Image (cartoon, rainbow, N blue to C red; front, side):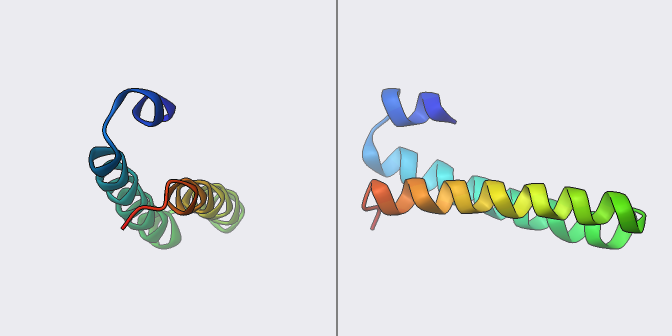
Length: 64
């Protein structure tokens, strides 16, 4: 995803980052339903951290 930051246009980056957030939210929902307690907490925590990273990129790039 960092390659998008360097090589793509602003609109394409913003769209890709938002799409990635949607994918991670869906994955997080699946982990919540389909994994054991310990794995669930770890996986959801990692997804939430990654979502936060992408939101920061969106904010930094001033995506519309």
